[in-house]
Image 1 (tube, rainbow, N blue to C red):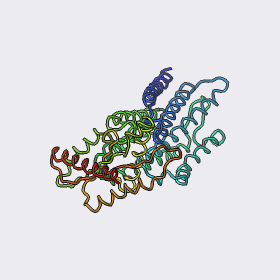
Image 2 (image 1 turned 45 degrees about the vertical axis):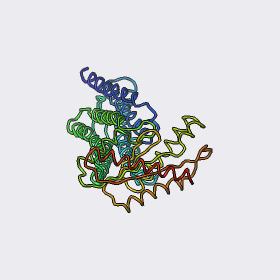
Image 3 (image 1 turned 90 degrees about the vertical axis):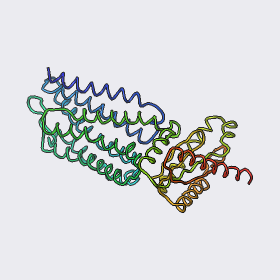
Length: 385
């Protein structure tokens, strides 16, 4: 009876915690993104993992019609859920780090082959008893195939960790390292410890606890990161920009800093003529285009929504030639933009920039004023033209 209480209490606690965080993650900024969808699946699969483990724990050693079959199905589903979780985590890492090679259909198919192979092995287990058997006392007994299960699980976990470590080493932006990459690196710790314990101590059920801890960490990180993220566009917000500038002043002594100020043309007219929904749509389109341009040109640039219809791109340590090329690249991105069918307005922006070596907050404020002034000069030129 004590064992049953252990399985029920442990898994119900995990289910309640996951359900609470899942309910708090139901807002548009997280739900509609590709990573948000995968994260929801990860939480849902972990809840199923807890349910299957709880069923297997309650049924173990019981005798009634169909008990043996239910015990076997529960354990098979439990093993499958562990693999699906590790696979989904790998997908989540690829999306969060924007690794396009991991997101192609061909690569996704190749990476899913180990999972598909295990699924076939699991389906055949009632006849082969390769993964486990249910003995005469209706108790679970590991088979030789347990090493295959662990191997595939660790394949996905190790691959994810290597990808994150590589991104961490290559990333030069200290702020992005701390805000985006480090949480992904910390995720792996609890499941690894839990899985090692479960492998070493036969009968211990701990993997779901490790995964739950890591999911809670990710959810808490995302919620705290809301403070630094613009809810509408998903870009960094002004507070995040202030953190970036603090980092620059603390660690980039003598480094040139360039601020590009970008403002949407005729934004007030769009709001007044077509409504605030159209205005919000314009802001999101500009944000997405700027995001794509920055990503294609260099991952190191800091992009934020500064306020209203103004955006700022901060670039550290680059010369005038580089800045001019980047500015032209941004302008070209808007010039080549294909309007969405039924779009009611033409999307264009004014851009101004200024460069300086800043040693204090006063220097930063002066640089912002200069870039803002340059942006308005560009806007006036358009109006005259």
